[in-house]
Length: 117
Image 1 (cartoon, one colour):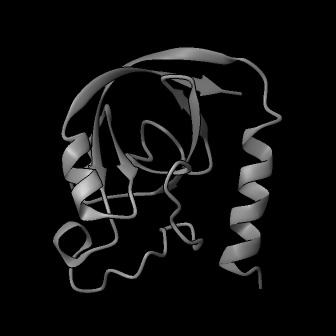
Image 2: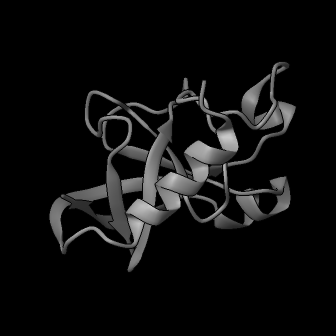
């Protein structure tokens, strides 16, 4: 069985060697952290895909729109769709932050999102 650390390390390496992205439209980008307020009573920092959520890498998506494991680019930074969220529906993405304060500071923003093939 792969550990969350190994999964995360492999994901980080893949993000940096993938080709140029293709635009997929404007999404509403919100933010979350591993606290009970954002993730409920079972908050533990483990993503739906089984790895540890990491700021600057992990996003939560609607898997019907962006499949889990997909790499996307937002404002020149590449993220991996590793999580899902009960509040994520359609053209919405939730960025993972380590702290609740940073997640609140992000707020809600609209950004162009690019698919990295």
